[in-house]
Amino acid sequence: MEIKVNVIASTKIGYKAPKEELDKLGGLTAGICYLPDTTEKLFSEPEEKTERRIGLTKGSGHHSPYDHGEFTLELIGIPKIIAMTLNNEKMYTTSEKSARYKVMQDVPEDQKVLYDKWLEIFKQEIAKKYQSAYPNYFTDQKITKLAQENARYLTSVFTPTTMAYTTSYRQFNILYSLIKKEIKRIETEETHPFYKKYAEELQNLANAFETLPYLDKDLFDAKGRSLSLIDHRTDRPIIKQYGDVYQISYKGSFAQLAQAHRHRTLSYNFRLLPQAEYFIPPIIKENKTLALSWCKDCESLADSFPQGLLVEIVEQGNLENLILKAKERKCTYAQLEINRQTTETIMEVYNELEKTGHPGAEELKPYAKKSSRCTFGDYVCTSPCGFKEGITGERTI
Image (tube, rainbow, N blue to C red; front, side):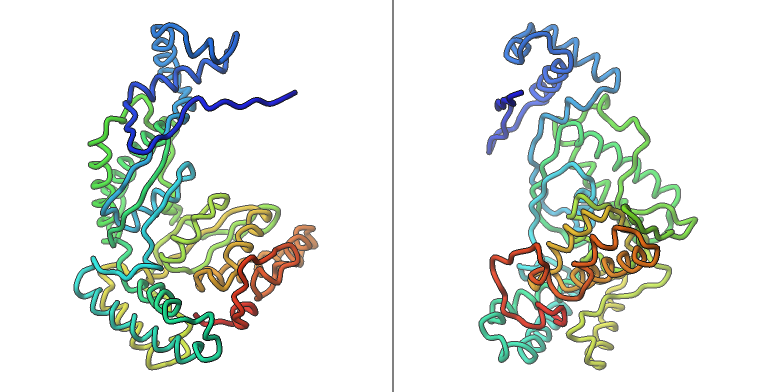
């Protein structure tokens, strides 16, 4: 049968949809489930009928029609960890100011001093090791961006940023209720200073949400859900599983986690480690003096919870989506930490599947190697880097 498509609702720049309009869209689209005639006729029904349906659907818990109405929020001054919290929920679109591409300015003085110090060190180390061999790739601009990407490990995961966040009317209400629930949980169950600060910032976000006209208690979560970023299963270890679906855990920085959970087809959460550990960028790890200095500087900022702080990351997904992750993150242009972890994850899952004779091992085999995606048989690179160590997976930056 022929499929027809019509635009029945649109996002418009500068337009702030009133709550009544979002309610009406939800009420009308709910009527499609019982469509007696045409959508055009449904959408011209008497207002009272739509109002009745709004009341019935909200009261019965049939809330999915209220996902049709969406709006885009500009969030200014939102801490990175709170942006990560929003980004870990599945129904969203986000555009966030990147510390990989912009010099960090609005950070406390102690972080700024160390950020500036290491920004220059990274520039020097990158240029010394790679610029003469690959001048076309390692331009001064490229070196600066890579230095920024690594120096930002010293800045707090609570560093404020700016983001545009698009979500649905219903999801906005679910998020608000989950945020309030998480604040209450932390107040009653957690003592670690990280969680206390996290709860304070969640409350700041809840306060901001309360200034908008879209909150509706009838659309709050009623299914016992929780925010997904933090793994609360601290009473038991993570059991690794390998098959068509997998679950693994590994140490990674907050910066890597922020990159990883943008793969919305995979699921991520984290636990704090018992003792503080920090990611050491490979290009300085090979220099003992620099590595020790880095660790000392990270420890001096411990109370700020640097983005380089390592956490236990739990990753869950299926093989098809793990391959998709490889095709995105196994690249010279990708953040090195997540690039290497993607290799380790694929190799781990592949080796375990091969041991048991699982057919998924054959699916993963073409990707279970150190080299970049441009060496995969089913991937065509549209902008070759010409950086040998990047292609072979041996780069340290």
